[in-house]
Length: 101
Image 1: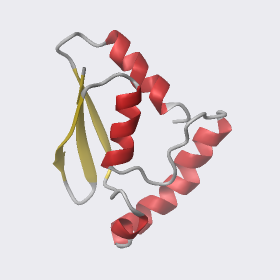
Image 2: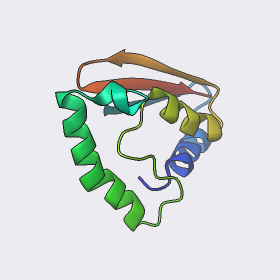
Image 3: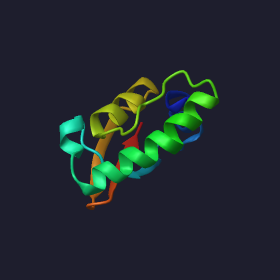
Image 4: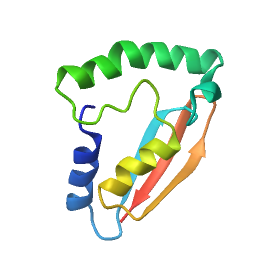
């Protein structure tokens, strides 16, 4: 996604006042060294090949990079006007994140 802040801002504008955005993302740590494991390596390869290339192809204004951890995603939602953001759950493969206005 080349414009994640714009997408989150759209969600903020259309969300009910007590609504929630649930974001399911590939599991990633906030630092490269947190992702030096078999799953992290696989996700970096896929993201570099698919996600980053797609975001750049649509002239993205805020390409997140090969892997975005919780802190980087929190920043996206904060820029979009969300006040509450948390990691609701995680598995070895996914982060389940919650954003609220």
